[in-house]
Length: 303
Image (cartoon, rainbow, N blue to C red):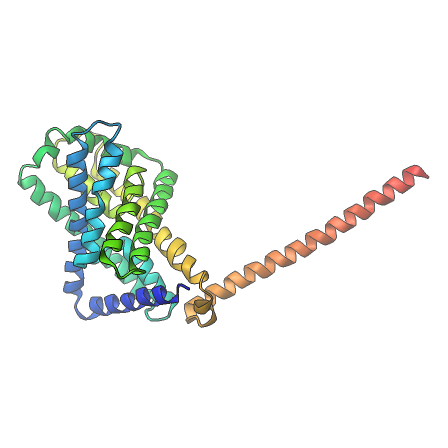
């Protein structure tokens, strides 16, 4: 049912890994572009969000952020959060190795950070538009709140966020209609922005722009590092576990002919199921023994 999509992304992972090996500069430029494209979406939604009523702000910001992922998908670039799904599927299908997976994750993340920082510098050099004036309060409030959340909050919200982002990529890949792709991306990104989920690459621009403008003490480089650590971790879990391994496990054809890494996961899963079955049987036996003891006690009391 899902094998065609799985193999599409696995082949994409193979090509991206080869690009990183053979032409690393090209890969990093693509990653830089992705960071900038997502950043453009952030600049747009905060510019608009700062001038509307708070009651409709989440809706306005959510409905206008789709440009970020639409640019990534249609223009082409290397987005870290998408790579968490692509590369894991490539690893599961045996077309890339473990080292390839981690190198691609690291390279795309660093490239995205560089792109976000470059965009923020250009934006600040251009005066910052209304975002450095009327929208500064909103930007600093959001940045401060992101830096103040607990690790479990950031981790959980990051999982939910990249689950939606990868769903946008997954569903758009399952249709050949460009208009349908845009609609699917639009709805998934509306959900993640309006609900306040955490996206590591989007946060890179939020923090970079906030730090370059006038900001309170609650906005700091240390806070940025803290947030990006937990959010990156949560985003990775969502893309690798919830999406890649999730759909791989839900595809019988993929399970019947897995790669070596996938076989190991299957053995682990099978071992877990076997342990659970053994525990269930032991529990049943114990239950039968307890019932027998209780019945004997009742008989003795009657006698």
